[in-house]
Image (tube, rainbow, N blue to C red; front, side):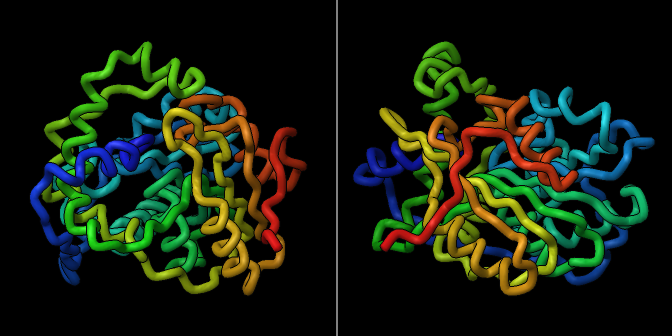
Length: 295
């Protein structure tokens, strides 16, 4: 999602209410469930798992891939309900984490991976690091945010479903102009069902903050807004950093004033270089500013 919440506020008055629900994932038969995934460079120095955002798929990493593929073994799954994993249902952060933990154990080098998560994928990445720390090396996330519940929250699944379709109708040249060159592909509207919208709402609305996790974690909050509300939540990134530091003091949060929420599509080389610098314990590229608590 890139600018869905602008349209949310515009569309709410004409929509019928709908209470979001979250189904529980199945407790048995997990060994029979497989997420679709792409795999690249199995002889790389270490494994990296890339987790996409809502209503997308592993293909969302296609612009970042060329800058990582020569160095790392890459695992790029489609999350439950998305892409070629759309028949793996229901989506939830916890169920996604369980399936990704299995993928890492089976396919990652030494059964462990660096984790990269964007937007909704950031929620999954943190849950994975908190619930299954033994398969996680480091974590790099961007776009983590929690939206407070209001009296209008029941409308949100309809708003998301509608705004995705409106966004799909807008010429890509207009999107690129509004988003500083970000290459936002058209979504698969067959996969963007109301059921999936209902399943995706709970992690975004007053989600439970995670338990502290031991992996060293880099948290980025994109800082640029403008005509479209495409900046992230620095206060959420800061709070998440404080939680992570309870078990790893090297966890840190930054913002970048020129980057928008989907900066993996806006500046893919910078995104990849930032990830590699974090994995390799090097200084991250210029332009980022440490998040500090405002007084």
